[in-house]
Amino acid sequence: MTRDQILSAISRGIGDGAWVLAALAWHGKPVAKEKLRDVTNAYFRRAKPEETEMPIRSRHLLDEMAARLEGAALVTVFPKGKAKLYMVSELGNELIQHMRKGR
Image (cartoon, rainbow, N blue to C red; front, side, top):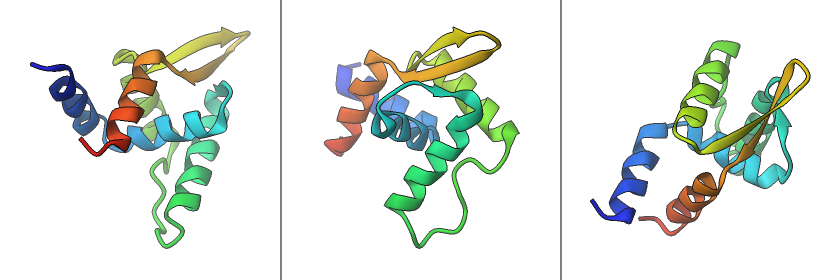
């Protein structure tokens, strides 16, 4: 597989996780997991004001998405006390650029 094929496959596989990545990149600094839902949904609201259903509707969806993105190395997790801070990883930034190009 080529690099573009791999990035395209990851892009298809993360579903609404793409909104989390985009929101983290937009936010520009690490986000605590407790705030990740708010940051993602606020970004989504700005991008799609006509939509009523947010990408992260529950703590369960938040936990699933965060684990999926972390497992795929698309986010970097920094422990801070009992909390975890999430930030887009180098691979996550590469995926964002790939998705922006529409590949």
